[in-house]
Image (cartoon, rainbow, N blue to C red; front, side, top):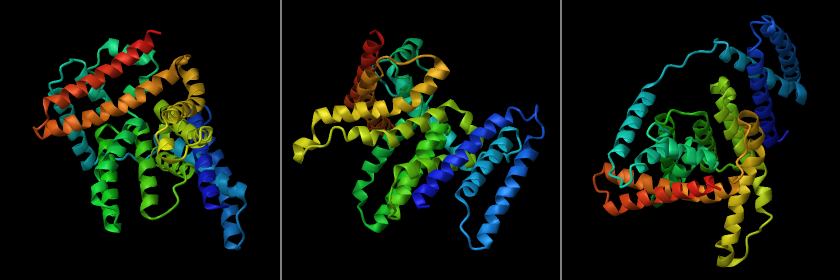
Length: 368
């Protein structure tokens, strides 16, 4: 198999094993021989692989992938029924938690003109929605923009782009590239810990880390390989996370972006020259294609869990995602300058206005 085929095959089979283990763990008490039965499957498979390796022959593809399926099953069962090794909270995580509380306090102390701006900024950047009023939460929910309030890979992705732009002045020499890598990944990792390391945030952090590592060492950055590698690492570290709805929706959305978006984007090819690069209709199409790609994979699960479908999802995403990006850039700048004690009132008012426009647009959509 080629490297890409190996990674995709291993990742999918391991994930399938973890999913099977999550189901099996529910029946361990009813069927106490489940683990011995799994062991009886593993030993012959492992024996075949070892024998073929020792004899210089290439292991059978089915036996090779089955081993990863069974490994995933064992990891999942052991973790869910409580046989996993508890990992103590480290010093860095405790520091990140303290800094997270300080960030929330800093946001609360920014003198935004509107009372609802601070709580929304805090929700977007820290995931703390305790300060949001019910009316605002309902607007996001009925307009189909609840995913914007739930801290996810979208938010870390925007912050990653900000970090990448901020480190551009360091240059592109080998040493500068290593420094930019360490700064970007270090900041993204600390933010992941600071916000509670939810499954979708961890997925985004792993995806960014693997992609940036491949860039640093000059390897091809294949989106499917990166996604399946991130999936495997996350499930190895915490198999029980596969039962989390946020984890499921996050990877399904990324699967849509990975496998469907490139195909949809090509339907509206980029034109020649400067005019082609700034074509507003193509930018609109790319936004629509991105939303459709995610929806194809996530809507069946969302319908199964919530029995609802956002009727105006396309309008919501085309409107809310650019506005959310603008709000987050303005918010990060406002917070950074406020922390330094040099934030001008103009920037605070601009940040407040951007948040108001976002909420107003979603309010109009929710009333349709």
